[in-house]
Image (tube, rainbow, N blue to C red; front, side, top):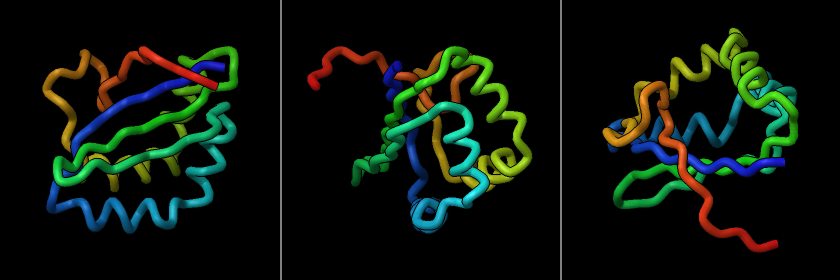
Length: 109
């Protein structure tokens, strides 16, 4: 199992839509998240900066493969198409990232 944290901005104009969408995430999106070995998935909002922090645990053996399967899923693609315009990626993210990956520096069970 590996833990993953990432961060992205949320536009003030899109905040209400983003919150509405995530109050009722589509069942097909949730099923694909589970199918791709993601567990304990949360998204937090930090206001007034409008930063979204994502955390999940990956319980599979092929993270890149599972993420590629998720990205190829038509329902997930439709979900992302609704959410992407509401988000504001950080200028400091690495090439190829939308949500900026974070480095875990501390953990306690």
